[in-house]
Length: 365
Image (cartoon, rainbow, N blue to C red):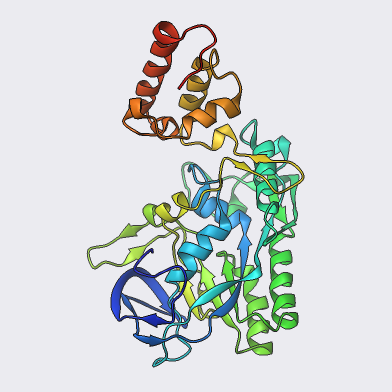
């Protein structure tokens, strides 16, 4: 149970308040407690999710340890159960259930020549493989364009100086291509040709999708449109009156007015609770979480190196590190390796064991 809402969507519910943060219903914003009314709920809305991978990454996942994200779990157990939508003012809140084809994910492969990390391309490839191991997720790829472009320079002495009065320089211009078009086409096509769908949920803040939503509203006005703005709540600010603001990631007005309900954030704890297992099977080849996607790759790699005399292979190390250990206060070594203090405990145990307690042929336990 999360935020007071059972995951299995029972028909009988009791009236109680929930602090949901800033929700926008029918294009109008209000901050209040939400209520689910006692009584029988309507038939669950059969729902499909459309995710702009670029927006989700830069809004919620970049520079976090949450990149190995289980999208099904995030929406099925956290986002949809808290989505407050009523068909009309007096109606009970709608329950929602994911369609068999639950999530359509739109992205583009990273270009190695423009990647910031040495393992960025390989890491993204592993994640895409992990997503495709689920039959409930489809992945549509665009591409990145990298070209040289002549751009105006901002005058350091007069930053407000008009661009046409400033000099120019050549820069590399990296652009994601086709992803937003692919998403818009998929939305429109599914809206028209999937009559069993009751709701489409869009995860983006890109205004380019608005024309597709306008057409969908005209063709299928009964179809519910949900909007999730991919912004982490922990990086947004709350003023003295309790209103949440974020100058960088405000909900796009054009999208918001076309949505039946809007959620303007994703909580960090929801992301943390929606992580895939380290090894994801089900595809042609197992997908493995990249070491660089852990909270502190440096501490993790140091522990793996220290444990090599007894746990030489990564899978051997993780089979030990992912289970609670009584000599570490029933904590998992992998959790302790998230910070310096915990890592010191793990390293001290490994080094002491190898130096003093390891008999010939024994194993780290």
